[in-house]
Image (cartoon, rainbow, N blue to C red):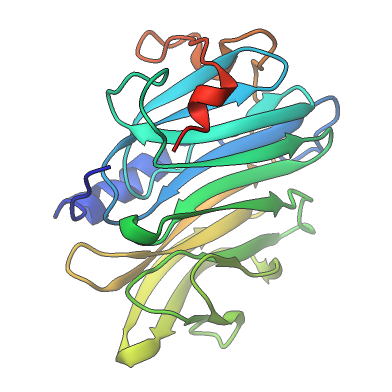
Amino acid sequence: MPSRPAAAGAALALGALLAALVPAPAAAVEEGGLLRLAHLSPDTAEVDVVVAADAGGSFELTDVGYGVVSAYQELEPGGYTISMIPAGTDPASAPPVISAAIDVTAGRALTVAAYGPNDALQASVFEDDLTPPAEGQARVRVLQASTVSDPVTVRTTAGEVLAEQADTGEASGYAALPAGTRTVELSGSGGASASADVDLAAGTVSTLLVLDTADGGLTATAVVDSAATAQRPIGGVDTGGGWLAQAESAPSLAVPRGALLAV
């Protein structure tokens, strides 16, 4: 797949894209499992993401760019294959940029993230703990996806260490903090450093993404995983469609499993 540097305006647009996401409910998942997808490879062009159920049926998320994390979708328990293909190509014939097989189980929330440089792209499955924090607190973890610096340490200006020497592709444990706005400081290899203000609202569970900027620096963006006032996600994969079947820009597709795994 061809690659391109992240657009110069990507860092500016990232906050607006992530702010529009719908977090999962704070209550535990009961009947199905939750799945979301993340494109965290800075020099990989926009992709379409195809989610195919072993039991049949699939759906597609189109034109996903760097730094985008989808909303959670509730899925029926079972096996699924997640494949990234070049944006605008035919999923029945286009070899995937990368693919991963996952098992969705009731009561679990998963994030499937592609990260790293395009010529060494990797995919990992992270289990998300959406347990609500105590009153007046927020819970946050770090997902280190920077290719500029490896490893990276993340701490707040109040001295709270959120991640210590986290390698690229590593997720920290969750930390409980008093709710409010925090300034986080990033320090990495080769003297790389940056700071960012993040809002950790009461009752939320968040993931702090460590990403690259277009000019070769570091940045951090908080994605809300779960909020006390959020609505439960709707939709699901049965024989096709999923949560994107309702969107005209993302039609349901019937893609053979073997075609998705072709390399």
